[in-house]
Image 1 (cartoon, rainbow, N blue to C red):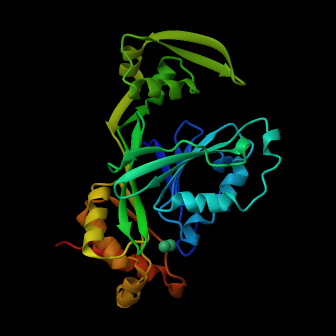
Image 2: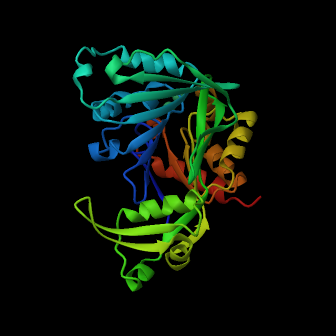
Image 3: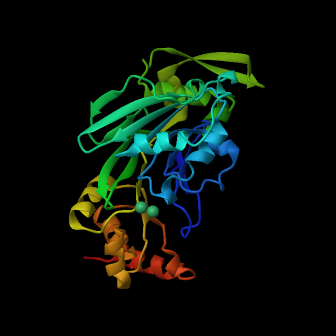
Length: 337
Ligand SMILES: [Zn+2]
Ligand SMILES: [Zn+2]
């Protein structure tokens, strides 16, 4: 299956957590968690528009500065989501720097920050040109489990317990549009930015009778265009398949109510990225530190009907023993019961 989203762990499973999800045919990406981001190139960081932070323990939030550094002076708005006390944590970060010259910047960066509570989600804005002072207005909405809804995908969250509230996330694509490259060749059509527009038109359920212009571009300039009826073009070149689901679970106590909540969120995910901090033989430590064991991670994935499992957030005590963690999780995942 050709996919529209390309998730990859930013670091080695023994290092800070973080999942970078790039979009096909778009200069756009999503981040789950903000651990150490140095492995991401600046060209990747500038693609980020939405950041979902599980909680603000240092290993999940230290990358905030690196992201802000890469985006400063750009004309864009970044939307960050995090759990309880997220405003305080973000404001604390922003208060750590001097901002007296930012009003000179030609392009104003703006941060939209959403704090997710059990009942409500609240959103505040921080503008670079106002030296990131909190804007006066605050929006409030009930927390329905859904954090972001766009025509082509949505991101849902569950609040898990890690002795502090910790968010787990699931990105669900509505449906996937793949382009038949052979058909493009047959019709003498180029691969180009128009494909992004074309997919958006389908996700937006634009009238199939509408005229759609395929454009040939050179260095960002349209040099030729050809008109099609949208529905007819879709019939020719678009292949629709079920959407992809990518889930991310980290720093969760292995208690039954937590596991049930996580299971509901990640049900039938195509890809699950999940922490496996400890081996089952160290269950007592895992419980004390409110983390999952590899066995719990594998069992949860199996119960939720997940298709592919990727582990991360290994405790440093298992340096050189990654295979043991992998083996334990895989056994629980494949176990027939
Ligand atoms: Zn933590
Ligand atoms: Zn952690």
